[in-house]
Every structure is written in C-alpha cells, then in structure tokens.
Length: 222
Image (tube, rainbow, N blue to C red; front, side):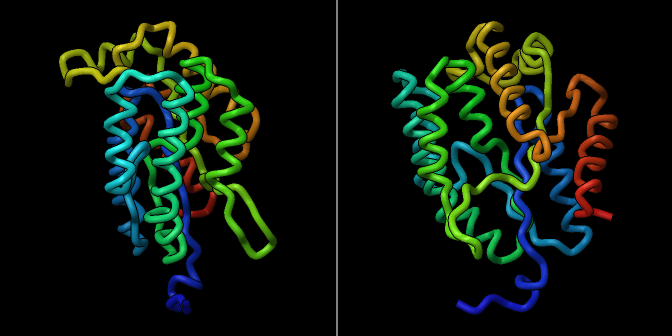
C-alpha cells in the first residue's frame, strides 16, 4: 500500500503516559493532544487496556473480575495485541501522534510489581505480542517517549476520594501501590532514555511545563 507523501514525510510518534490513578495523566494527555494539533499534527488518543472494541471488553474483565495473576496478564496482552494491530500501528503508519494512557510499562508495574507476577514471563509475552517487522528486521514496539507521573499513593487516594467507585486495582491497599511504583522505577532503570520522570505532586501548571519540556527536548514541539 502506498502511503500519502505527508505520512511518509512526517513519521508517527508514540507517547505513553504512565502512573497510578489520581496522578493527573488524563488532564495532560488532553492538553498535549491540543498542543500537537495546534502545530498541524493528527493525533490519536487511546488507552490501555482498551482502545478497540475487543480490547475494551477485555478491559472490563481485567478491572472488575476476580482472576489469578497469569490470567490477568494474558488478558492484558491479548488486549494489547488487538490494540496494536487494529489502532496503534495503522495510526503510526499514517504519521499520527499516538498518545496512549498506559502501555506495557503498566503491566510490569501492576501485574509484575503489584501482583508479584513473574517478570520473565511478562518479558516473554512482551516480545511475543509487540514484535514487528521493520526495515532492519524485527523489533519490539515501544513508545518513543514514556512520561511517568510519579505520585505517592496517599496523595493519589486523596485526589480520588469520592470521585468514582474504585475498580479492583484502585481499591488495593497502599502497599500494593508502593510495589507498583517500584515496578515503574525498575522499568525506567532498564530504559532510561525512553522515560521522562515527573513529580506529579506539583501544581498542575508545573507538571504541564515538565510535560512540555520532555516533548520539546525530543524536538517534537516548538
């Protein structure tokens, strides 16, 4: 299939937003989408688990049904495979900026760190599900930039109090989210060039400036 010249001239960008609920991801995803659109870029907004009709059905199971850690991980990666095939890869091929509320780092943080599921198995699933043929052979699809909104669990809990009925993850104790944060930190340490670590306890304006700085350092926004 021949791509339009505009898509060939402007490569797609894949940016993921990570962090526990209450960290402020959604607010800044929307703001960053508007910033890219103001510079003429097409933007695809999406989330994980979810993003496609099938993946949204799997999301509902993962967030609400009781299951063991392996079943949970398999469902998350099944949703991710469909998400990549049906939405993310086509959007990147068009030259879109894909802004995704969580991606694989969340699986390592929540299922690996929080649940204590085997990291080697998660790595195997990551390789299996996210491998893609490129110009120089196969590679594992990862975001071009991951923005991690780091926030203490007690602050996140205060922000979410009374906002909505918590799902099974949001209802976990503080110790669970401490392990989730450690899981995110481990992912950052294995691929530091991909991550921008942002202190999400700061004011909304300060956090937004940090998000902009992370994206501008890549040369993607003027």
